[in-house]
Image 1 (cartoon, rainbow over the protein chains, first blue to last red):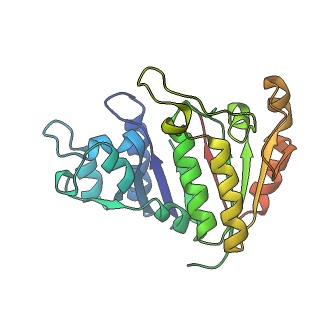
Image 2 (cartoon, rainbow over the protein chains, first blue to last red):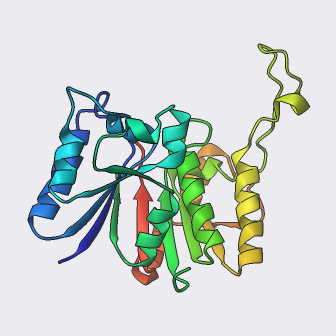
Length: 108
Length: 137
């Protein structure tokens, strides 16, 4: 079992291939790996509660740990209470700590 | 803080264009503050990030003089990173891709930045505890 950190910086409402990155997170988890999906920049936009877009909630239910960069949330006026269940706000330092721990890290 | 590690970053975005530059510098800053050694390979437009001839300007549209507007310059952020590294006992080694520098006429960089090639990035990636490539779109 390996550990992966997937950093998503793009908004799926704007960039279609974000869905493939979510699929990658899901696939890695299904194969027994530890997976963190870290949302940053416009990547935090789908973390808002949204009746038509529940992919992140499904990923969280599947066991993917989903974190959203605090500064990116603040910049976009997204309060913690507005986040999809399963998405937690976090500091960007998490990325450095996981990199220092040898977690395989990918940016999209 | 965890044990001191060596982390390598590859940046590709030109300054003043994309939030990726800001996020990349935030990541590097976090690594430095945690005392990790950091390698930065600036490729393509990213060689402009530490370009020393960047100049602040006024914002005449909104009626601000240069001093009031306080326009942020990435070269100053890189300089501050170097200073923080000295304080935290970390080392920042920043290489600008030489070919990319020549193409853009950006030979002047803030102190601490040197020229190199993609081969240096490969060597760093092989020797580092972890590597993150932050590509352009």
